[in-house]
Figure 1 (spheres, rainbow, N blue to C red):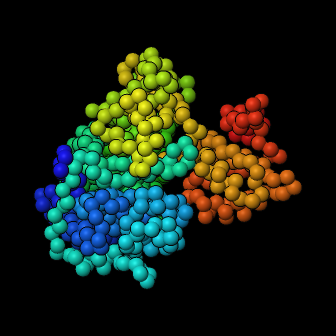
Figure 2 (cartoon, rainbow, N blue to C red):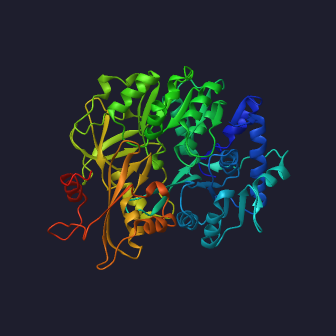
Figure 3 (cartoon, rainbow, N blue to C red):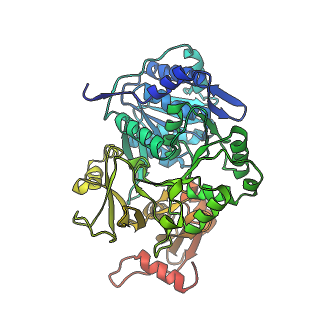
Length: 524
C-alpha cells in the first residue's frame, strides 16, 4: 500500500476508547455515549461489508439530520467505502443523477424519500442494496435492523492510503451539472487538525456543538472536529430550522460552538429569543458559504459579543481557504470595500492564495483576478471528470471560480464570481441549470435567471421569461414542473414575463444588460 494513513473512521474509535461514557450524539430524548455510538457504527460497518460492498465503493445517502445519518458516514469510512451524501432537499431526478454519476453500490435513505429511492434504483445499474432509515419496503433493508443484527462486533477499520476516497462532495459547475469533488482520508486528516487550530481553538470533551445545517455539506466536516476531541454533537429537530429551538438547545446543553451560514446566523440574532436565553457558553459561531454584509456582522456582534468566526472555502477545498477569527471582527479589519463586502480573512495555515489573471500570471497587490489556491486541503479532483479536473488545476493552482483581490496584509476580498452563480441561503445556485429546467416546460421559449440581493436569503433568483408566440406561461404550472426537476431552494423567487428576453447587438443574452434594464424599470 502506497503512503498508508489512518482511516479517518478511527477518530471515532479513539474517542470511544478514551471517553466511552461522554455524550456523543443528542437529539430530542435520544442520547448516545461515545461507546454506544461507536458500537452502532461498528455494527453498520460490518453490515455493509456483509452486503458484498468492496473497498472504494460509493454509498449514496439521502437523509435529513437524524442520528442514522450521522452514524452512516463513520460506518462508511471505517469500511473503506466512500460516503456520497446528497442535499435532502433535492428532487428525485437530481439524486438519481448523482447516484448514476458515482456508480453507487448502495443507497441509504430516510423513509420520507421513497420517490427518490425509486429514481435511484432505476438509474443505478450496479446497486447492491437499498437501506431504509425507517420502515423498508419489499426488497429494501432496514437500517436499524442491520445495526441490531451486528451489535457487539468490534469492527477493524480497513487500511487506507492518503489518496483513498473518503467522501464525494457534490458541487455544481458553471454548466450546472453536479461534479463529485474527491475528498480523501489524508486530506481530511489535515483539515480536521486545521479546523481545531483555527476555527474552534481549545474545544475539548467538555464542549457541545449544535448542528443546524445539513450534515451532507460543511456541517458534516465540522462534526469531524467535535468527534476528534469527544465533544457532544447536539442536533436540532430534523424539520425546518427553528431559531427559537436553537436558542433553547444552546442554553440547555451549554453549546460552545456551531457551524452556520450567514442566512441562519441572521435569523438567529434577529430572533427575540436571543435576548431571553443564556448563551454565555458560546465561544465560536462559524459562518461561511456566502457574502456577509458589514451591517449584519455588526448586528450579530452586538447581540452575541466577539464570538463569530468567518471562513471562505468551497466543497472542493473543504472550507479551508481563509479564516477571519473572533478577534479580527473589528473595524480595523472589516472596513468594507466599494461593494459593501468586507474581507473574508487570511490564508489558513498550510494554504496559499494567489490572484491570477487569465494567463496564470500573478496580478499586482490590490488588483482583481481569479482566486486560486494550493495546499493539503485541496481535493484530489473530480470523480470521472478529467477535463474538469484539468481545468480546475490550471497553472498548478486550484481555481475556485471566484474573483477577488488581496491587500498588502494578505487579507482576501471576494468581489465577484467567474460565472453567473449566486448563493442563496448558503447554497450555490447555478442559473443555467434552472434555465434548462424552465425551458423544458412547454410554453417557455427563452429564460434568463439573475441572482439579486435578498434581505432574507443573501441572494435569490429573478426569472425573466419569454413565452412561445401565441401561448401564455402558467406560473403555477411551471412551479409544479420545477418541483420534479429542481430542489426548491433553486427556484426563482420572482417571475417576470416579457415578449422576448433582450439581447446585445451581437445577439447574445447579457446578464449585466438584464440587470441594468431591471434596475431602470424599478423591478429590483
